[in-house]
Every structure is written in structure tokens, then in C-alpha cells.
Length: 245
Image (cartoon, rainbow, N blue to C red; front, side, top):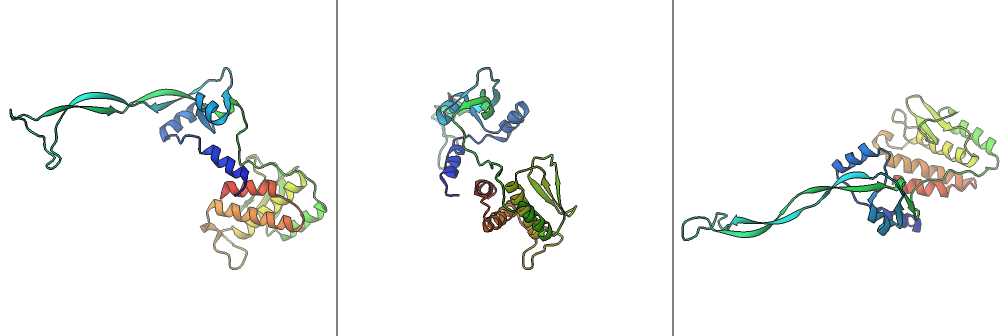
């Protein structure tokens, strides 16, 4: 969390505008896969990127208030009532007021731009080999309180623990280090976060914990166990934990 990479990520995210709910809907309707959105000039000035030639912009509404002069009744600040003139009629004065208004503007998603790389908290899949991999996985299958299955996971997840099916699923054909780390991560979930049967004595009901808490706990366990056996997962773990916490 104190790394220069995480600091750079937060500094970059702070430059993006927090769009209103209505503008978020407009963006989603025009480009459902949009992630980071900014105006043409903002991409150049704030992020050192430029919009690719031929890209179709996303139309949203931007505040465009304008001022106008208008005759207004003079109000007595003490009584809150209009001040009357000698003729008995309310006095008026010319004041400048701001009229709220909006205008359409064009923004672009990061996928429509090129240039300086945007810092992310993405996790790169671990791909190095693990000494004694087969023995390690056999040991994990014995330690895990539920069966471990290897399959194609359509969601893109590396693995998951299913309380309803009482099983751990791991994406097949991953690298040895990623498979080991995922197996420990999901086993930690099965031990700590099964609301129907929390398996570690003294651990509070897993159902009371937030998703973020569960992920930080499981990944921290995975890192600790892997480090004990000389398997360095820091390239994956630190970004993962930073994102969930």
C-alpha cells in the first residue's frame, strides 16, 4: 500500500472526474465497456494520451450555467418582507443571477486513446514453476475440507469456493505457481468463510464479513503459506490485496 506503484495509481485516479448518475447511464448506453472516461483535452493535458483518429465520442451533459440581469424586489433582511417605496409599491433593483443550464459535450474512453501507460492495480498471472508441484497439490487436496476440481471457469476467475456445492474449482492449465497460490487462496475461503460451517474454532461467522474482508484474508493466507514454501507470489498478491482493501 506504500509502494510507488500504488501511489502512482491513486494520483492518476484522482484526475478522473466523478460523473453523475445520469451521465454514468449515458456512458453505459453508448459504450457499455467503458472504464476510464475523460474529455479530448483532458486526455492530453492530464494523462499524456491522445484520442485515436476516427474514434466516435461519447455524448454526456456538462453544466453550462449563464448569468443574466433581472429586476428583483428589494427584501428587508430583518423582516424578510419587500421594502416599499414612497409610492407604496415594492422597491426593485437590478441584480445578476445565475441560470442553471447544461450542454452536450464529448468524452472518450481510455480504450479509444493511445500514449503514456495508465497505472493499474491489475494482477499479472504467476507463471513460474514450483519445485515439488505434484506433491504440493496432493497435499492441498488432503488439507482442503472439500474436493478440488480443475475446470474451465467461464467467468475468467482463477478459482472459487462454492459453499452450496461444497467444492473448490480451479481454472485448469494455469502455471504451476498460479495453481498453487489459487489452491491455497480458495482453501482459506473454505476454512474461514463457509457460513454454514466455519471450520476453524474461534473464527467468527464468515457470513458477517464483507466480500473485501474475505478476499484480503484469503489472499493474505495464500501469500503467507506460499512464502513459507519459498514460492514468491508478491507480484500478484500485493496488487490483489490493495484492490480489495
